[in-house]
Image (cartoon, rainbow over all chains, first blue to last red; front, side, top):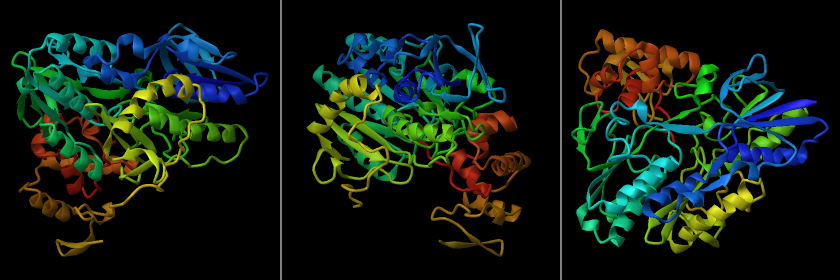
Length: 410
Length: 105
């Protein structure tokens, strides 16, 4: 009996277990999935909660509903991995041994990494929207807020879903317009990046959107601390920005057990082969989703594309065949831009987001790097796709590798 | 690719002036790169950071992040910013003769 252990039952772990459980013969394979929480959150939905578009219930489902039958599910926190002994230690005292390990434990926000952030102002007038608690607290706050200065600040890269802070800014512009108080709300978008986004063409395109929506962009601001007595954020080089309400995207880090196991980089992400998704240090360990240190987006779409490649490579590894370095960093993100419209970007490690049509070249129905109503509907329909197709590991009509057809260079 | 003349030596650089080959780097080149970035004199504190970056790069093949410099070289973030003002990650990498740090998306 061979043993496969999957750590993490979020987007990536759930897709992987569904793909593998259908092909690995149960008489040869023992599959165990470990996760610490019973609830699966549709994380792309957090963005919509502060504006009353989704409720908490809209983004929650029991994790176990999405796991295949015939696997072992253990709900426990993870103490650590002993990769040289092929063992995982759980907090409930159990020790699991494995032949293959897939790590899909994602990333989490760490407001405590920034001095003063989670002090007196936390969830009073300082909020995150990367947790369900943060998103709900912000919804409550916005309900009675009469206006003032809203600052959206990215602490440091990398972050999960790098377009979400921009979407938040666009939706805030729309929502305060709907409330009739947009003229009383100043929106400032503060980022350590040199522009609205990292990749030059998209950065310019999205920067223009900020301008059009009267959202002030402050680039290259590296926050060092929050002074919540005076409602100020202060950069490492002592520049200051005042806020009435601060929406922060705190430091993102991988799971703590990764640090305790000596397997991560300085923010607990695991050095991973960018093409094969095998751990750089251990042949029988694979890494997927936000847990990797890859220079691709930390996003569900990326986890989904990685799953196709990892599935192939996992089977190859079990058959002693060479792995394929097929993962190209492909990401595909709908960007909600407010007023019932959206923008779509599709890119990989080497090719930045370009304009064009997607997924059918020349036809669409979605338009790349362009604002359309159809793109907005793509984003809204995606929640259904996520729960009903994506998590179950079903084939979607989008290739894992990025396609240049249908994209324009100029 | 452009070539630049540093301290009498022809060195290949990218469009933004980052050295293409870290092995071309010398202390004289570092001083010239630094003054082009508005740092008139490289003090011992600057050198400690630059040397750490180069050694860490040699070992791991990755340009260290500010957090990594703080954790492993024991230099407080505030000091890193005062040594290399306005974008220390990029600036220090450039003066250390390393490439441009990967932007993370």
